[in-house]
Figure (cartoon, rainbow, N blue to C red):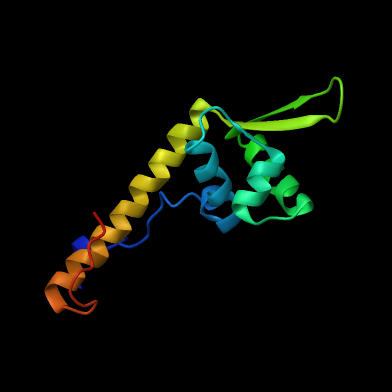
Amino acid sequence: MNDNDAGRFAYNGLDRVLHEKARLGILTSLFTHVEGLTFNDIKTLCSLTDGNLSRHLQVLERENLVEIVKETGSGRPQTTCFLTDSGRQRYLDYLEELQTVLKAVAQQEQKEGQFGVGFNPA
């Protein structure tokens, strides 16, 4: 190891709020559905319970990553969630940092051949 390697694998851009499995799933589902998703749609897509999804949405809303709109009227109330502009950018920044991790692994694989033929993160 040389002095240039210090902090090389710290990956400070791996945002702890986004890195949690359920929240990453929620953000990915909202990123791919710009028109927003209902609470029940997210619950189904991410295999979460009502309580679990509610708690994760609270965290994401507090961080200004998602906007939650509750509509009432005739019939049952409906909750729809949207990715905010800052949430979209923070998500993209997070994915960029993940690419850095994958590139580091791919470079090592090319040097040592540890992962076998075909590992290609790009």
